[in-house]
Image (tube, rainbow, N blue to C red; front, side):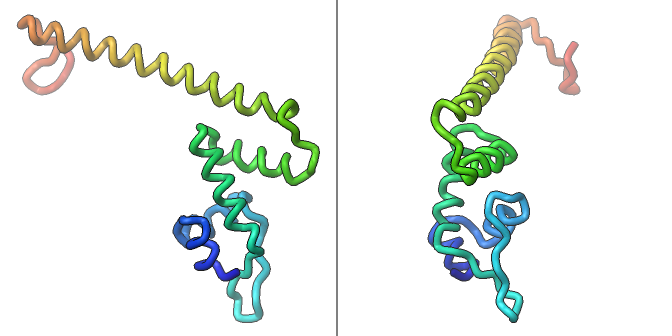
Length: 126
């Protein structure tokens, strides 16, 4: 498949296909004598798998590692569960951090509504 065909099938841009190839999500494509990339039909499926993992919260490096583990044929749910556990732990920490920030912002808003604004006229905290 040509790069444009892969991009259309995976519903991503041609630049995304190139980026995924550079980052190791996709194996390096074969090249025609003209220099054009030629991908196997499975490239679109691999991109969709990578996007699905990213939608779960995996970083791109984690996606690459997970796909390479799958490529070896040794990956099972039991052997790869730790990857999802790490994502969930990271998301839990981020949620907790956002909840702290929100609490602080809500407290500042409440103070402001009560006439005791923490912000000065120049937008700096007082």
